Length: 240
Image 1 (spheres, rainbow, N blue to C red):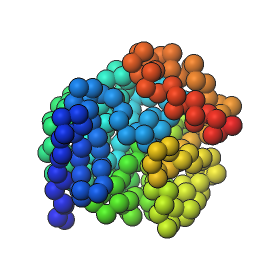
Image 2: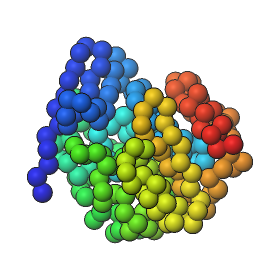
Image 3: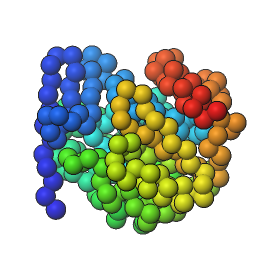
């Protein structure tokens, strides 16, 4: 399969990853490379409201590595496996200061459709951020893929899927997640962007009653708390 090469723009304040000039795949401030610049990335971190100390995270889609870098820095007891289908995206990881692979971070060049069914139930968090040059990757929005995610998750675990709220099939994609997770799923629209993050739980309820802001944040450094608190407060308001 041929994969499109991304390109990088840098105005001195922000370094951004693109497949086209009109669409930003990822953004980083070189002076603050571990901050979550794009709004939806903070929303996706909402899994911490339910699983504050994950053992093993699987992330589908590397992009500019904002979430991978944040987790590597602020979740020191967590292992993270990142699956990225496009080798050209992986090739620019150092330009976005994504750490080299180590005992806590592993970046795999593979198609998630092939990777997830064979991995076994070992993840307590799965993050799906599968966008390419033409938007949402259709194969990562199928019923069979969400079923495979369910099978790859441990008994108490959370799935977070970044969807395009304006996609013509958005309601269908949400319904597929709900079906695979037996109705235990909630969509949360993202501020400042046309994204929607759907959270789905396996063995844990997706409701404000089962979440605690202080419980999820007090375990993390002040730097992480400052970035996440306003968005976590908003997520809880939405769920209530």
